[in-house]
Figure 1 (cartoon, rainbow, N blue to C red):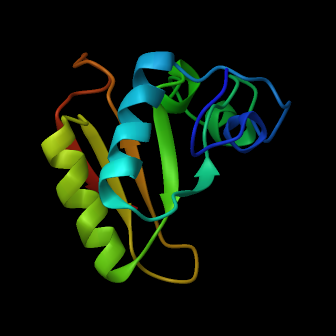
Figure 2: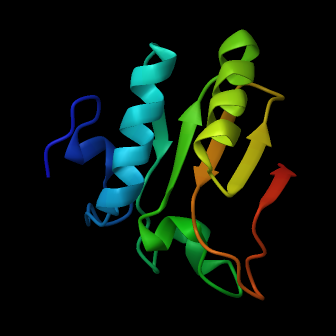
Length: 123
């Protein structure tokens, strides 16, 4: 697929280079990016089941569905991204705003027993 603000390679699994982003999710991300007017530096997009982060989990995370993205962001832009994500209807928001690798996780997966949504967490 072709996106206005993202390349296939930056969204691909860093473990195996597999592509698997969901088109509806990406449409939502592209709209949010357009609205906010600043670049989204992707630190993690799609992840295969064998990706080291996913392999450590008891059940696969949102990234394996293609409906999750981690964006490197901090400060005022992090605040704007959080505000925009809540308004846009993202259902999972993870916040890491300490240390040198600050990011915000966004997903729009549906509520389930193993992944309750809406949900906000910190790393």
